Length: 117
Image (tube, rainbow, N blue to C red; front, side):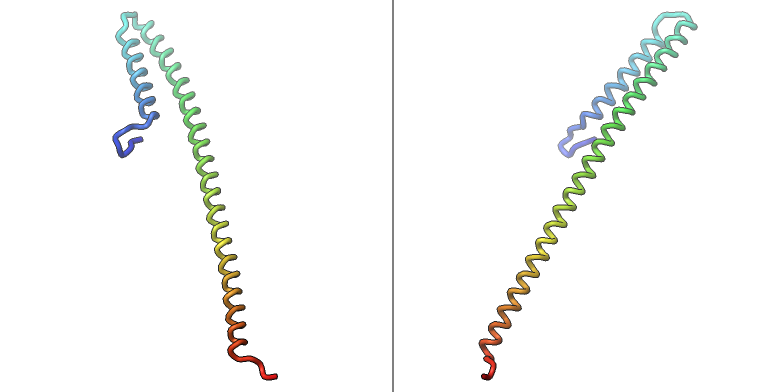
């Protein structure tokens, strides 16, 4: 996420940090002096841990996205209700003003043309 003033979102920083940590750990496992079988075991263990952590991260992200989506949906519904209320209030005000103008118009008409008695 990039902002107009050049800042980046905190999520990008965390992702970059996590990827850097994974690359560093992988390099440490691969370049550490050990026998072939020991290195393969370390790689398997590292891969399993990385997959577990990635699964947890995906779960966290899903939860955050879902929560954000729900908040956005609620905000949209709130705005929709506010706009609907404003439109209804405008319609009511228009109807009342129209009735008032029609009533005043008929009163002026009666004053201008009184009925013959």
